[in-house]
Amino acid sequence: MTRKHKFIETIKELIQLHVDRVVLYQEALSTLLRPDRKDLKPIFGEMISGSIQFQQELKGSIAGLNGKMDGWDNEYKGAIYEVWESTRAPLVGSSSKSILETCEQECEAVQQAYQAALSFSEPMDAATEQLLRMQQANLREIQDEIREYHDAL
Image 1 (cartoon, rainbow, N blue to C red):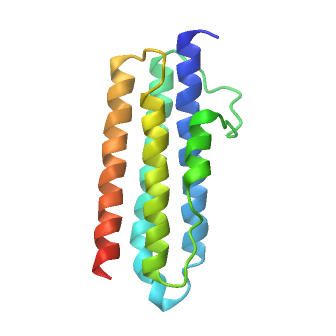
Image 2 (image 1 turned 90 degrees about the vertical axis):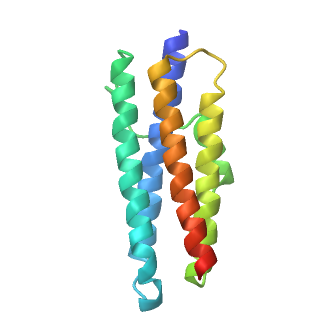
Image 3 (image 1 turned 180 degrees about the vertical axis):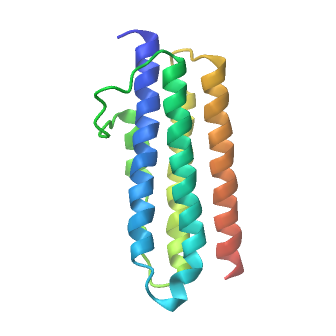
């Protein structure tokens, strides 16, 4: 497997992570029927739209590397994806505060996955590295917002 191909596979894992994050937060939104939980809808909506945007940017990165998304079946799960999956917590809780705690844990799991991708042993092009660092910083900002909201409850 060439270096470029291995790195493209890593980017596909991050895309899969964001695909699954969208599903996770959409499912969480569907459980917010109680009036005391409606305050979480904007947060979950932001998480969903952010992950959709990140997917698009990552797909663009693959195209920029002359990689192909053809035949990709939205089920690409390798070591980077496993970092996220093994450390994230399910979005459950009896209160908005407890749900936000699990959101913080999930955000930390995403940070760890991005750090693993950035620590990739093969060299990556500067544009892709910059994209990953920018997305990681945006994800950290969202995590900080969640923490602030959690602490205010």
